Amino acid sequence: MNKLRDLLSKTLVVGVIVLFIGVAVQPAIATIEPENIDVEYFDVTTEFIGLDKNYTIQLTREEIEELDALLDSFKDSLNKSVSYEDTIELYNDMIMQLDSYCLLGDCSLKQVQELVTGRFQKPRFNRFMNKLYDRIPVDDNSNLFCLITGSASYTLIIPPGSMLVNLIAFILSGFGIYLPLILWVLNFVRLYFLYPWYTIGGGIALGCVSGLHGYDYHPAKGWFNTYGLLGQKKREGNLYGQIFPFEFLTSTYFIGAIGFEGVRLYNSLMGQSFYLGFATYAKIGYNPLY
Image 1: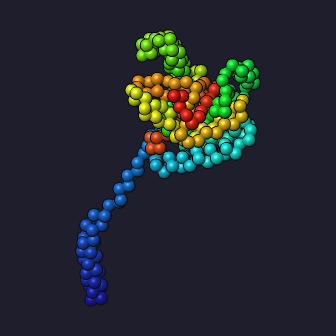
Image 2: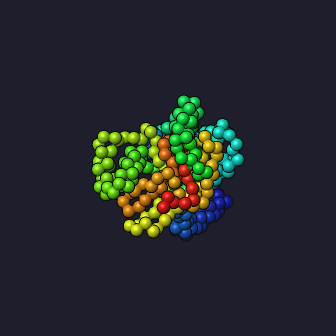
Image 3: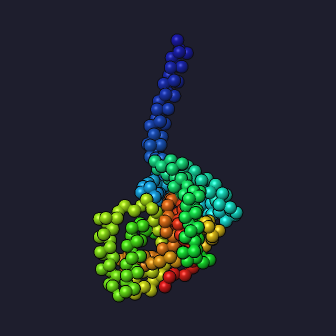
């Protein structure tokens, strides 16, 4: 009986000690909170030129840096490509990689692959462009009916209707007609009668000159690669489009590709656009038009 009493006494003492220890330790434990880790996200927008679709998702800094490394690897592979069949294979693989980052939205792989490379593979368009070969001014900076890809700052997609309006105004201004008035009238016509024009592709502007007096030049810093009827053309560094100028407010942008259909990626972290697609005519060099 005494042994039982002693055992209960010891158990009670141990229990009280444990209770006090628990009460003392609990506030200390309660003050230790999980570390608050803020993950910063950045918008990445995919623009489907020729489908009239846009899609925006958010990626972390690490994911965007991975994507940027993927684009660099793609560029290296393109530089080693020796045929348009190889280039198309690289394009299709790149589209699959973009899909792995969920950048294609509700567009299927087949749909985007057809948008980016499909027209290039159709003989009818090859014959058509061959007929135009002697009618379009070409030089070492030019390419016709070409796959085009690149990544650069200071680039812009110009809707085809806007390009037509601007080109007509640019031509008419040579006859002494006031350019801003022409642009206003022709844009009014475009908005009410010609829109939408997205189904025939847009233009890629590379580089611009800003300011009322046109002294502040901003080249498109990056690289572009074309593969078409005139072979493979590679440009890297400070680039400008050399087809014709595009006036917008107080800036002039330089069109470097027309008839563009494909994908444009833009992320708010890097401040650069990536292009992957097809262009009817491209002319990209190292000097602005003026």
